[in-house]
Figure: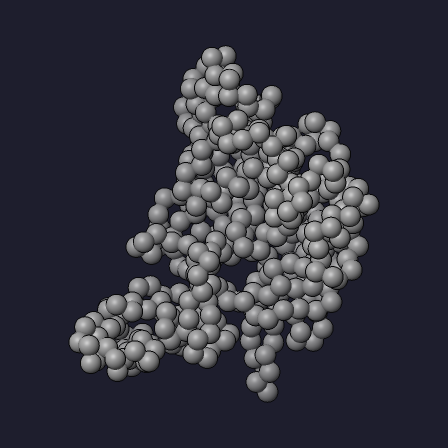
Length: 377
């Protein structure tokens, strides 16, 4: 047996994808808007040009947003030196200090997909497969007290008792290749609920972010370390049958995705204004992918369903109600177990009618990708 299997994986975005840094950019300080584009400012270049190295000049400039110092240059060739990159689209909130969630990039503003994000999604699919393989049943006694780490005892039972014995020790997922040519966009989003879908009310305040648009392709590698399952390495005590699961990753991920897609389609079919998304999910669920391709949802907008055992937990309504109450998962709002989670994060289109009133439409979910695995020989 060779020491490892290596897969080249292409990841194509099907809907906008936001993987954030946790930082919020501020309008006129970190970015500026001109026409139909948003410009990420090079604050150092602006201040250097305006003489901010001089102590007296720096004091004058301290209270001035950088965008105001070059507002006549933005969108022109002369302004390029003061811009790190530009994005298609603009945030709906236009006041100074309005916030834009930052997309993860390299130190040189190159766009990539973190291997850790993809590995986390693969882990969820493996957990579901191991749960089904062992025919486990939901039991509140098996959960931890802390809501954030409630499933840790179950994860240890299924995946291994510590990092040295964890099944995912045998799975390495690299970051994707860096890309400078990805046309990042500004996307408007909301958290929508069935209670907040009337007229122009969409259930939450607007959220604006940088994101990778659909139809972008990234390349990365996935490596399965077979040596950890060899006779001499049995001290690693990885889960029984772990190697066969790792070698059928696309199929396991697709099983997880198919269940999620069916649930999301049903949820949006019952949502006024969600018909377009429901139809999209119906089309997605009908794709014939073969054994080398699978669907996966990544990043912001994936929600509870993509990070947990999901349907396996909801199979027992009494158990689901108990954990919803114990961990305050609904924040005091009564939601039937079969309808949890009660909200979704979606891409919104924003326009204005002849009277200047804001019109919004739900466009798509976030984060869906198509993965194609090709084993290296």
